[in-house]
Length: 229
Ligand code: ADP
Ligand code: AMP
Image (tube, rainbow, N blue to C red; front, top):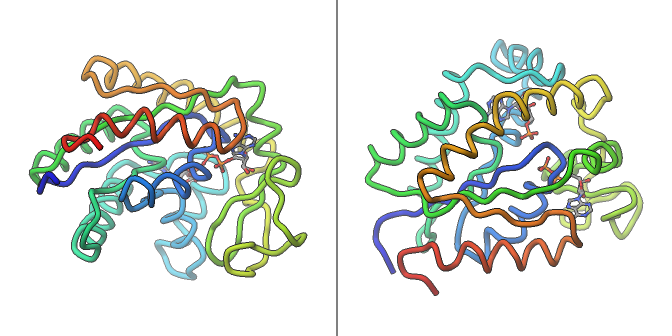
């Protein structure tokens, strides 16, 4: 096993299935799932100045400013890498979303003496995304993701993992979805070229059953680790 941490980034438009896949593949690849969206959902619940600031961006489907987002990711990465013995690194979901964030991640990883092993694009055609997002439900307690039709919970309205109540995300409204997808194609998708040039990008077809996507991701990522299993 390499002693230098190795991270994987999972990218794709909203609704591609990043969160769903991250929950499945992270344990298999010995990675810890870090989702900036989950971090912001947690913070926005709090009745604090920071909570109110985040809520304002989040609920409109706007990006939280880079400086704050980068700081939150860096702090979470520190926590994860200190706590979890036996893990390889992080599976980073929802970050980077801008070129400035991609460059900040490179610096962060280099400063820590770590590396990015792969960037996975979960590729799903745009016309599929709205039907996925409009049926999405998440657990208000643990954040697990479901879909009313494509991935329903065993008991309606209850999380299979923790029994928490399922709800629709406050940013899965038609207006916020449109804004988020527009931001993705304008600001986030161009970063894919940056990772392609760096030789890190692997593309997986996300328009297939959840288990098939999972198998495609693990098969594509495993050979990218320095101790390729
Ligand atoms: P992202 O994190 O990329 O925004 P999610 O993981 O939240 O996407 O998935 C969006 C919605 O699509 C969820 O309701 C999820 O249950 C559903 N979903 C995820 N993967 C698939 C798939 N392969 N086929 C059909 N629905 C899916
Ligand atoms: P997600 O769960 O990844 O769809 O993210 C939900 C929301 O959290 C986004 O619409 C943004 O408001 C915010 N967010 C998550 N990640 C980032 C990021 N890397 N940069 C800026 N805002 C983010």
